[in-house]
Length: 594
Image: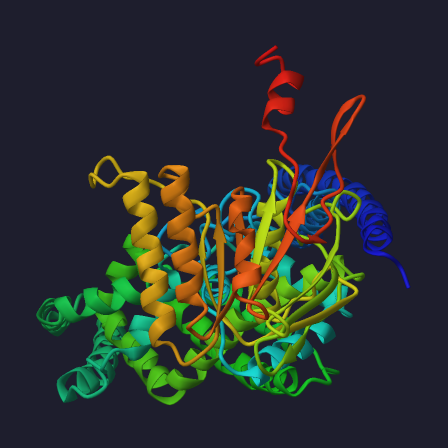
């Protein structure tokens, strides 16, 4: 089996060669098109001055050849664009495998400093978890992925179900790529889904109105009759003017409703085109997972319906041409005709399309997860365990390079309720805490993680690691931290579900004595609730809590070593409290002090 790098490299070579051949062929067709155009002009001039009939036929044949070549060239241009998109997707994935995910959305719009864990764990923003996972091609998919990363499910079946879907999709890299290319090929406006969904849920304004239904049939028939009669008598029939006046009185009378409907459905054809293309990808047969099979079957059944809607929307959008719209409304009440057909379609297939849109968005997120799983074949899927035990062997941070990340073994919740984590600066305490937190989040959405063994319980998560003060709200750093801790306490004391609490250097905004006393009180309070957690601190004086609370609090630490070349770090979790300090050594090493 090919590695991800080998797969993408092979695909890059394939599409590069295909693109080169297609461009050469397109250039030849362009030249032939030019020759055909010049030939048609030359033969046409010749035919104009000739009395021979076959000259005219030859002109028509060459002109027809020109039009055919124009069509072929347009198709080749579309193919070139699609091939370029395939290459773009492949190149971006090769860069992502090297640690550069800048081509993908970072989810900065979803940053929320008040969120229980996302701000502390770098779930959103530049270089975030979101950017590492995100490959979505729909606006709804971007929002849904953010939602899944921001909330933890409560049922084991939800997670295991997600894992099975992602496992199967990760074995189909061609499907994943084709889905993404289909989504990228057609741009989607930020409000397209909102407006179309709103239109689908609106009440019928035209189909229930008897006047509109009768007028939409009667007035076009009368207009055609008057036009034909005018041609027959060789003069404008006076009744036609009266019909035109009646038509415009009707249009003006219902203008408000027409504008309302037009505002929701106008310019949505591209959005519908896009979702039709994505549904075609989802309709691919051969899935084994139950959810994927049902989604594929529903996508197949929705294609005809969405194709019919696409035609109606394209027809309605033709009214944007001032001349066409004016003439068609003047004689045939074109707006009434289109809106009646649209409402008839909506009444019959409204729920079908809403379901299809939701399925595309859900699939969009699973495709992102499938790409992530495919790109990390060495990762494993967590066992979802009962109780509170969180167990791992060789667990590494998912965002760190496999060559740079150091794995750690740990078990929390079985023998002890809390880890008291000590260690000097830069030894890896914060990274370890974030590794645990991020692993909980990613395993919750069904993604595999870098570890040799992994067992995750169903937990809620709250962190206090990266506190920000607010000058605007007149909140000091220390007050902001106290507010955060108070919220954590309020949550865990009333929750029936277990919490994982991660605190990094709590109460750092006060003096050492106050900080130590306060941290003791926090830990002792949390011990009385249904929580497990890790508290990182520089204060080794807190290590005696393991003696005071045996079986509930255990000491672990990270160490640094002083070597001739300076400090070195192994980033390995060790039992017991830390005995090293490195701040002075680091300042000397950096030339800050002598």
